[in-house]
Amino acid sequence: MKYLLSLLATLCCMCVTAQDNTYFGWIDKSAKHIENNRLDSAMFALQSAMKLDPANENNAVLLLNLGIIQRQLRLMDDAYISFTAASANIPDKVLLLHNRASLLVELGRYNEAMEDYNAIIAQDPENVEAYYRRGLLFLENGNREKAETDFTTCAAIDSQNLFTKLSRALLFKLNDDWHGAEKVYTDIIDTEAETNSTFYLNRAECYVNTDRFSRAAADLQAIESEERDNPYFYILRGRLRLDQFDKFAAKADFEKAKQLGYDEELANKWLEKTK
Image (cartoon, rainbow, N blue to C red; front, side):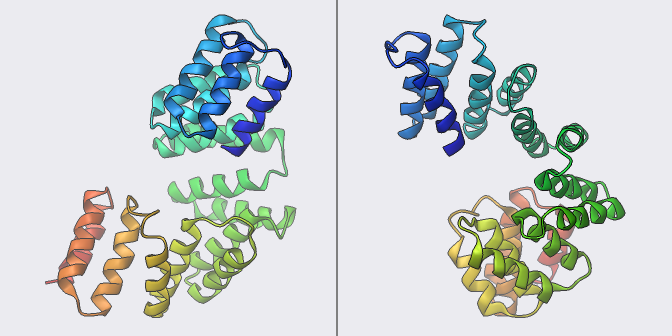
């Protein structure tokens, strides 16, 4: 959202005398709505700007921002349409492709996402994030060899990049080196300016797999509000509760994971342990 606001602010500065219902006036409104977390109103404002001037050369940037807002609002198909419409004339094609590829992954359209990451790498061969995310897709397709190649490419490009660190952690996990992976996630949490709940979730997974349950419990407790819709959060917490001999609570967590879409066969295996 910060990048989105900066783009809109730049466009607003192009016309300092923007009136309320002019092209730049609507853009200014959209930026203010985003600042106040009124995303529906921001979406309407961007659409209104483009309706006023359908041929404006800045519309590709507006479409990118519109897609980001639509995704936040869970209007996933609309977001895909906006990203794709922006792709022809967007100044920063790599940024657009990253946003669309990420959306496609969320939609389960992995082959299309792979095409976008391939396009990013063709245009920017040192884009570490693209190698990392393409590696994840290779893993999803069961191609560990290509995944590992992408992960090691990250390190060759920039050993200190966040996505290189995430790649390194995944390589440790692929080799069942949970202690090594935990050290990487701890380094990320301690050194990155901005961390998110997924780092703690991954570290909790490492703690669970090395029987350090109290540390895992602390990480899971810290991110419960952010990860409440993540089925794997409940799998990990259920495993903790099994270790605490609280089968009733563990069963509730495993059932919640199933409800949220976790693999039914795997969830049932954990549920068997609660009987």
